[in-house]
Image (spheres, rainbow, N blue to C red):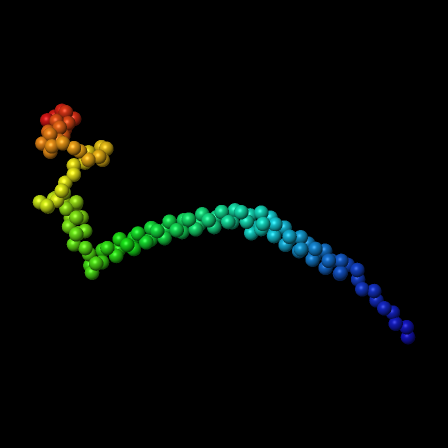
Amino acid sequence: MPTRLKHPALWRPLALTVALLGFQGYLGFSAIGGQFGIDNRAQILLDIDQLKAKSAALQAEIDAYRHRATLMDTRRLDPDIITERARTLLNMANADDILVMVDPVSGEPLSGKFEELATDELMRLIEADSTL
């Protein structure tokens, strides 16, 4: 009884080769032009730098809020800071305080005698408001 050998089908190895070459081409395209490829590396590094700067700014803001919160701690309240804030809020002064008059427009200290400054300010208010 003669045996006859079957030749393997040619399309199976050919299909496998085409599929593997197609997959290799996809991987090559993704490595160069994909979202995380070589072409987008500069943009990714720029995004990383921007996010680090934003993170540093947010961390500085968090640290400032933490510092302000620790100043509110009842065990750490400084009496000098409390009296200074209270005087500022109430527009009061102590007899030992040194006051510096500041021009509200320019923010520069005013010079001269208090009486002259008071009369000049009063005259400006009178001229500005004609109902007086």
